[in-house]
Length: 200
Image (cartoon, rainbow, N blue to C red; front, side, top):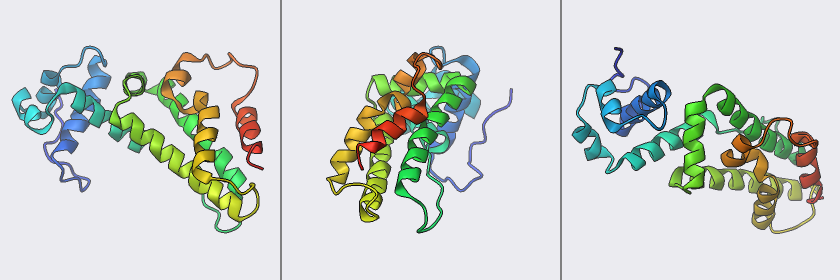
């Protein structure tokens, strides 16, 4: 069996990193519901007790794995085109980009997608951080749109919360996973355009 390196080669010195990577590998290999701390420890060539010295519980290991997945696989940033980029276009790209990444995870990485559904259902810190990051990015783009007069002057933070709430079906993993691709006659593009029109 191939083991996970005990030291990370990409600059991560945090002792949590190899555990997180081994946890991802174990989840994909054995499945979310069947993976144990002993499975993760075995991939590292360590004892479960060693892992518990870094993470007090299995739930904290799963939350750290999910946080890493959110950051590495589900972190979308709109393309930058300098001062000529319209906030409206970047906002559309952001919401549709997050939706696309979630669909890719649902279809191509079902075990990890199941994990992030768990984090959302349980409101774990990793999901709250993902949601906060999305709201913050949307708020920045709304402020930019107010500055360029694309959007009416308003409380950008409140507007970001409202926009994200109205488009929750596109970025909340629970809803993305529960909604068949062709269930709604309204496309994601139409839904995002309709929501953004409220800012004008």
